[in-house]
Image (tube, rainbow over all chains, first blue to last red; front, side, top):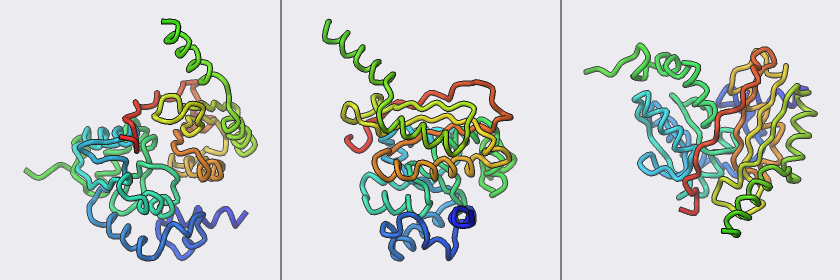
Length: 144
Length: 120
């Protein structure tokens, strides 16, 4: 039905006026939305995780970091364990219920399962190449 | 030694028995995806949470509904189906959403080791 399609269109589009119909509006104030907008725009790859990239606190978050390290792709990390507001806010922002969450060039890509599947299917190199992010196994290489 | 053996047996039993949340998850997935194959495994015994907690799940669903969809779209469908459980207590959900045409009978990849989470 149309009612079920609308939120999905919004999440695929990434940003939309339909977003205010999302499941948990209370978790995402305008102020927090703007703050997260800034976070996902601040680097080509941004990961919301438990712990830090130096010390992941969760096996799923660590796996995401390992996949990105494997592809030699650097990223900004945000530790949701030290920021309860961000922990709930990012779930509402992405319309995604779990952590970790990976953004590439401001677009939500997925969590641990999706990153690993894309890595196995060779789709991660394609994604980084498409966004001109230097990566180890794709065509886009780091400039010497 | 008896204590260790009985703990191991208890853990194995917990992993094998299906709790109430696991049952609801299985029923909702079956109703929504009319799946030819579903497996639902509670993995909370692998994590830093109280015994009997049903907070971490691994679901594998094979369905026509996933045909022609990206992996992200498939996962969003499963998340939507289980939205209430995810709001109420399930805090990790591993998903293997397989279109029927791609189903090989392969079990999902093993989950990573718990590193402690928020109790570190």
